[in-house]
Image (cartoon, rainbow, N blue to C red; front, side, top):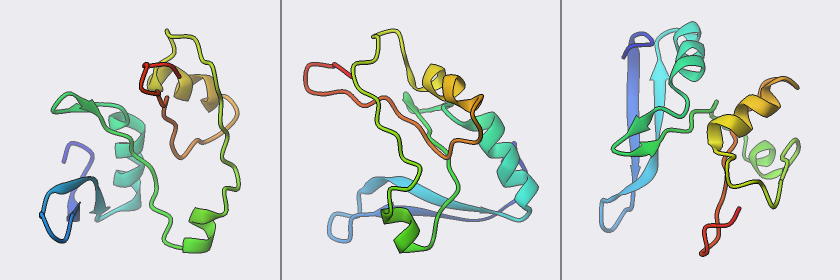
Length: 107
């Protein structure tokens, strides 16, 4: 990896079809290398799709709590994942952000 030595990678797959579910877990040998990956590789493209990197939260109750989640509606069409991330980064560390679109490509 360009960020540092990787200890393991697990691509999550459908148990029946074995097709990728679109996410994976990557364990770096050093925490500083994981930090570097978050800082330098977030939103880089793989096969035309931007990667969204975030720390993995193993505690299910924390993942499901919704604490700290913010939902924003009716964004200007010029706002993409990177500009949204950059806008909110002045308030502190964001684990993840994504501009979601409906079937009409509206945010």
